[in-house]
Length: 200
Image (cartoon, rainbow, N blue to C red):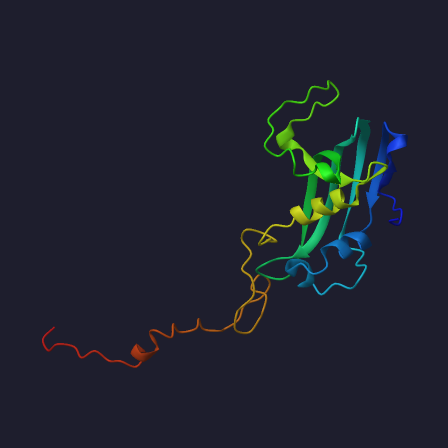
């Protein structure tokens, strides 16, 4: 049996409203191994990794369970140009359904609208997660929010000048005298002198 966590809710306790907190050390653990996180060189359990909070309405309907409500938080990663820290904000309205594992993936092609009046969530806005029928686990839901919030190339600012590729200085805070590298395709022409025509 899986170890109980603060993000698990027993189906027999539904309907209910719960508040969940995600601490920095858990955010650091979830994002470990992602390049823009590891580039910071932050320690394990980094207290500045980020955090999150959600207040969710949870209820069950037949064999399915649902969770809906706001999730807000932030995470800190490296700027893709300057490698300095960038804080990204998360502000999402969660709409999640939990289905028994054997049902997931079987009804992807069905376009039938929800018949229950309690289900006011559009299918296209709905995330689907498996559960065992007795308890739902919101940890994968929260982890997904942090991973999805990380862009491919985060920037501290659109005007970020990044690091000098030769000496590594941060060009946002200092300048250097490095010359742009010569295109190797043009290196052979560097010392070439073109004679001028007389009388011109």
